[in-house]
Length: 192
Image (tube, rainbow, N blue to C red; front, side):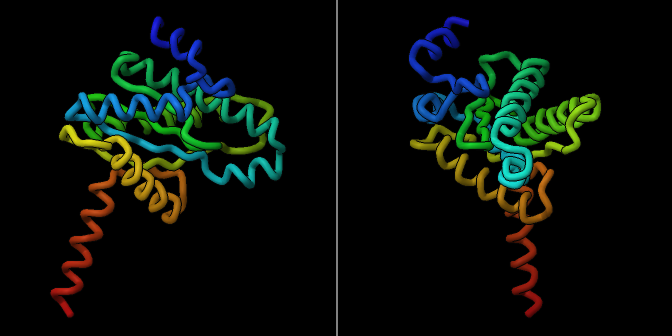
């Protein structure tokens, strides 16, 4: 709680979502890259959010962002201690979560729980006639490395874009997507 109060005083909390902002991400990523040898980064992006804003307006879009981030925070608190993860609003409808000492599959399971909680929320809501989904990319780093969190974000982002290309509403792990692609490309080269 002291850490959150300090972050509030330092302007590191995004007012709309209640998550940490990009300034806080920059500081935290330096700390984690330098002090941790095992962490997993996930980047989440709400699907078709621009179309949503165009159709329902920015105020409703803001409500969706606030609701999504609250469900995300509640879901993570069910499984993890606050010291094991940190959620950042990375851009408009993009969020980054840094998990300490968690494997990629564990992170994927947390995000699947978030997906279920999000769908349950919108099924129980009577008013909205829309469906809110997200896509996510996950990348684990297992060594202390300069700028490691930023590298993990870059690779998780690449994975996120693959999830979106494949139809959205998907959660992909970097190694599963790109290592299997590399093996497939290798096999094709052998055949030709």
